[in-house]
Length: 122
Length: 401
Image (cartoon, rainbow over all chains, first blue to last red; front, side, top):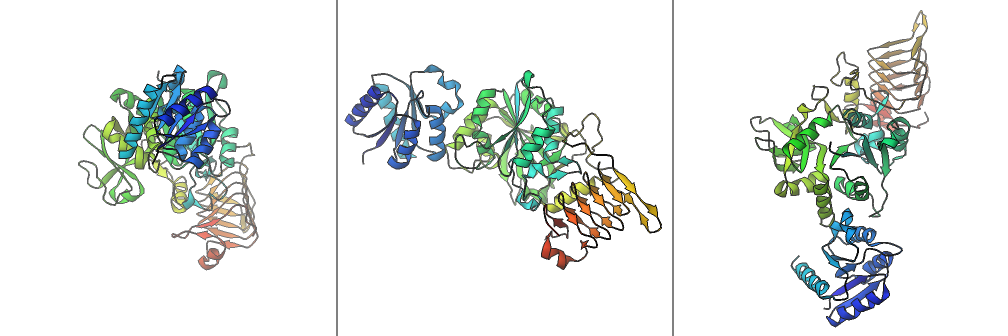
């Protein structure tokens, strides 16, 4: 069974990049352009892991994070951001990993593998 | 000076206090003629120097919010001080609070905005007088992550409490929620240390543990989940209530049932009550609309208005009736030839002529028609009212008799 990853990112070009690269890695990819779409995808698509941007329209990453955690307590979440002040936000501590936004996805892919591995043993 | 934020858990349903909690949350239940239960915790906060206080409400919160707004709007907003009721906002989750820890977790944004060094978590359900500064000083002196206030209770009451196990330094080494076989106090096999639901947390540790708890299968409760987990990995100490007990009598009550509520009220009419309401350095504040002073009228053959061994509030008129060993909230009227004994009459109750009332709690604004007897015929009382195991009758608010 392919693992399903939900990419939550408002910038379309980045979203497409993530989608392509992660599909190439053998994952099934769902996408959402903001937090509200992400919550819908969480309910209908049942992802195994979520990559979450912070600064987004409609519903931002921090609020989305709180809502995800209260719906699906154990789903691994990676906060993916270029904004460095996020750790001021208590809710950010609920994420399982933090990756700085980049066009090079090596670090992100590594974290995804780690978290999905960890999830197997849980 | 450390920055402390007080958060009072005021969402208790108080199901065993029904019907007094039919229209209000437990912290809003009237107590001691003119107070509400939460007034004791709020007064403690104020006298302990707390100036940033949130009461977290949820069920049936209208009456409580109104009371806080009317009676406790006494701090200075320009100085950054406040006492404020926060209803469940469903900002994170669409459900009611699932447990005490969840109530704080759901308000994590509030913690973030305030950014206190320490969070003092309290319950709005208990009646006691305590100087929280003593507990905070202990917490800082020990340099720990969490301090839990503890009171000695009889071993046989263990099933009603979270029981704390300590070592010789009062470090908490075990915690049992309502155990049948409790760990007793070292050197005191008849006693247990009960958690009073009063916690001092370092904010960062609190937030981390709340988030971990939110992400796990848990009942999201401080006593059942957070404290047991913290014992293993953080510095957790117990604070002896006697070190902070303002009254010095060890008085602390969770008026969880109608019988306990009745007894705690009735203690106030004894000659020297365990709970001293007359300490001018530690007054219990409340909201009370201005009413004229209490008065008694009529002295004539067979018709004398009297009140003996009783508490009579402002606005009461004892008009040719007799009141014994009872507590009357404001604006109660007792008409001629009525006999009231061992009872609690809440605000605005009107007792008609020739009525007889004994061992009865009458909720607000009830009119007792002339000639009625309550508390004398258990069968009849049970048909109309709640009657407790020990025979206390409760006449609910709004009933038409």
